[in-house]
Structure formats: structure tokens, C-alpha cells
Length: 387
Image 1: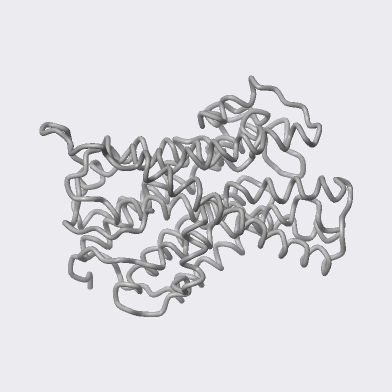
Image 2: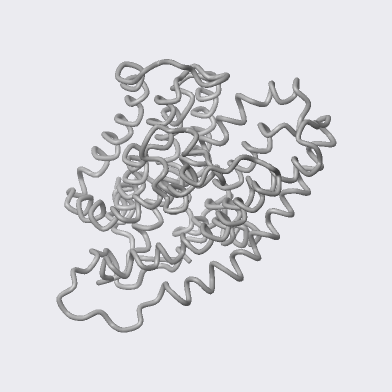
């Protein structure tokens, strides 16, 4: 039976899950950037890509859930946008400039016409991989995030109009569309030329992975799942079976590599169940694997870590010798050290760029004037899990 409507509370596991998502992407890039000898890297490659896609899908669904859970009573949409842009852009601009400097240091070709779209986070709207993957590769997901944040007041208002007893139907419809999209991409979009080592074209990959309106489906699913919990319609699934379902989805994902069904289709439903399962475990004081103090801290700096990790992995490899690779033990130790370096740099970026940016630009200078449209909310005292 559905539970009663849920009042607002702190959910520490949401922060821990942010780190989990970012760490999965770190593992993905660690496995495919040439640190391991060729045979080991070839064996790791299917798992690496699956892990990376899992991490990004995890974060997109989680973002919709967190923003919905943290909606502030009567907050104007303009203030919401201000806070999100203040959080995203300072770190992005600093790492974009750092990436440019590192590229020049490494003697890599720099085409400013291809780089500038990434500075403004509009570089994933067209299927140009040379633009999407320019400078700091991971920023393609920030371009999706930018659309999510701009659209959130509208998406949230639309989801709030769905009657509580139909929210599960809405979640099922979104999952069905995400699972159907790979088939549609195979029919509608050019199947050639294939990406190296993958059974999909660059256009199909762009549409399914980095085209913002498509990825907004994952974000909207997170909004719906948060509303399911808020309205007391959660089914009391606990984290352990939810994690088991995710493991099954991951196994299917790996088995479908390197085709279009190795992306997000097998894992979207398990992730949509895992996030509220963990959130409700926090509410009831039950078991959660994401609640530890270290995970909380790592989750706090996870955005900065996500932005710097690819630069660390790429350019340390250049410094050590772009063509070098190592055995499993040596490469693993080296990557562990680089994770520590990434974490230290992420702390510095968070402490000296992200936090001052939020203080400087993320707070309104004056109370909003009457007449501004507020962002709909569900509780008078929302949890502070966003910053």
C-alpha cells in the first residue's frame, strides 16, 4: 500500500549518490585513456563504456529528483536560474581556460571556432563530434544540464499537474520512451559511418547520448520519481533489491556492447527505482550504502571532481609519455594516485571558485518584487542538498 505524503527532510544519501555517479565516470575514462596495456584495455573496454554511461544516466535522473525534492516555497524561477548558473558556470569557465592552456602546452591543435560553443555550453545541439568533444570532453553533459535547469520550472509545473495516482503511469511512459529510442535511432538516423569499435554511427550516438532534449527525458523521470515519494505513492522498495535490479540492468547493458542498446535503455528503470529507494531509506533511518561521512564530503566536491578528472587523466598521461602504457598493477596504482590528485584539485576548485561564486552571484541582492511568478513548491521547509 502507498505510504502517507512525505514531509521535507534532509537526505544525505543524495549527496553520496552524486559522488557515486561522478566516480563511475572517472573509472570509465581511467580504463580507456591508455594507462593499461593493450590486452587489458581491450578486455576492460566494454565495462568501461557501460560504467561511464551508467554514471551519466545516474546523475541525470538524480538531478531531477534532487531539484524536485529541494524546491523552495514561493521561490521565483528567476532566483532558481540565478543559483543554478552561479553554481555551474564559475567552475566551468575556470576549467575551460585550464583545458585550453593544457592543450596549448601539449602542442595540440586549437580551433577557437570549434571551442567557443563549449564555453557557452551549446556545443551538443548539433551532431558534430569535433565540437562536442572539444577542449574538456566532459562538458557535453553540462550542456544537457543547462537545458534541464532552464526548463525545470516548466517541467516541474507540468509534473505537478499529474494526479498522484497517475504518477507511476507517467514514470512508466518515460521509461518506455527511453527504451524505445535506440530502435527509433536505428530506423531514423544514418547508420554510417560507424564510430570506431562501436556498432552505431556518430549521429546515432549523438542523438542518444548528448542531444539535450533526449536526455531531458531522464531528468524528467527524476522529477516524477520525487513526486511519487512526495505524494506517498512509493512502494517501499528498499535499496538492496533496487541495487540487484541495477546489477541485472548493467549485465544486460554490457552484453549489448557495442550497439545502441548498450547505452541507457537497460539501466533507466533500475536507476529510477534505486534513487527513491535510497531516499526513503534515509527518511526511515534504514540501510543506505551512500550515507557515510566520506561519501558526503566527496559528494560535495563531485561537480568540481567531474570537471577536472579528465584533464588530470589526459595530461598526466601526456606528461608521462602519450604512447606509454603499464601493467594492471602499476596502472591501477597510478590511477589511484591520480584519483587523489583529482580530489585535491576538486577540493580547491570547490573551495576557492564554486563557493565564492555562489556567495557572489547565487544570492539575490534584494527581495523579489510582488508579481513575479513563483516556482511551485511542495513543502514549506525544503532540505538543503543542492549546494
